[in-house]
Image (cartoon, rainbow over all chains, first blue to last red; front, side, top):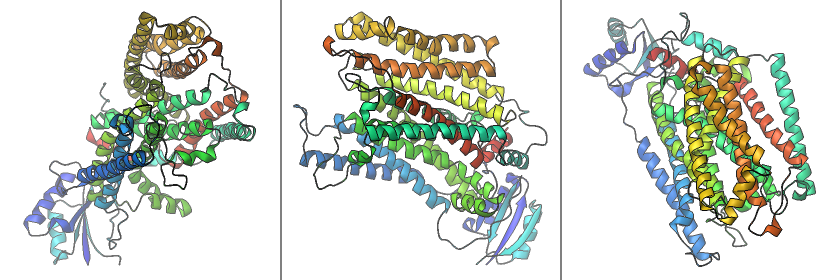
Length: 168
Length: 442
């Protein structure tokens, strides 16, 4: 597979190029922006759906609920002398529930980050462009007409364009 | 907060310039740096020897005696856990509120959190005297059918600190990832491989930036809740007992306020030291210190209000057991320490930070140092006077630390400095990508 790398000095130019390419029928999933800093444009040209919040909530419920269940059953099966206070009480173990719920949220966020960012995932090796100190690089994967694409990217304001092959 | 001047950097500034400057400061080691590492290393080694001596000879070799079962170790535990709030306050709150001026400050703050938690978390281990039995605190199925006491505030402590430590490490690590990739690109040999592995294959793609920023925002929310809960739980260690002056409802917020107060003070001191020793005047400018000093002054006022409320209530209630602690704390044996605490935590910051003409980096640093002294004394005055005067007068006692506690206490301060010295040579102390982003955002 061939990749086209186009360097733009301004994020806005890259965003406009992405809109043009999408209008021409190139899927946004075939495009990627690279930069040394986050590209902060509103709306984001390659906005992706995220389930990080959901992952955090589900993980929090799982870990916090599991820990609470452990505490409940351990206290029920091996009761301590509580001086007349209830064996199980949310007041007595609410802190444990809260902290383990938060620990679950932390784990969920970190796991979702690794998944959504693609870090540590065994995907095929995509060539990574050399990043300029200023500006962004737009990568387009598997375009049928790379020469024509390169030309249109230059016309859209790219300061440099190159065609590279995959590393694998 | 004051706005950052738009001429933040020199005209040739840019990502390459900032990167080259910050990475350049990580290379090499000056004579004073090596001397600092050596001195701190020796103090830490001495502290480890003292701990070893205590383990071999038993807890009786310390100054902890009936009725004062908690001495310097618990004082230090509360103190260090309190300082750890620097990272969460400065980084998480300011990140959530979008305060641009935080950018050169956040990593220094987050590193303080992690190091303080590592150090503070050691004290319960030291205090239990037989640290190899630490695993008895953990809930695991065992042949003795024993479980930890889940309703004990000490177990709450364990869960809270472990959660806070793991969350803080991740919160420090997340914004480090892009810088680790930069470090890998500008390193060679083994260093390159280590940084590459730590950066988890970061390429700077938009997908990664979006996920990183989203995760940092979520983590900021979560870590704030954890931070408040952690020092509340530390306060519950005291307030869940029925000891005079401990068993009150104000302790949790009082501890949280004190923690944030001491955390800001520690951050200011670290920033002042970094600025001077690493020549970071270009990044850590007076406006950062002034903004933090305003927060410090605010926390000083809140601390003063809480302290006044707590003492007024005790005095007015005039319960025999409480008024006894009140009196020895303010007029007797501990009176000098009490009024020193008030001077350090309230009078000095109020004068030096409240009068704008006196506000400068040196006076802000002096105020911060005073606050750290004052907050350590506050922890001491919470722990020792109450324990030394139990309800039965025949059981009253006193506490004086032995050379072991003094050595270990000195060792933890040296360990903090040592960890920081090593950290600034291994990682950029200012987030390169965030700082540059801040320049561009203007």
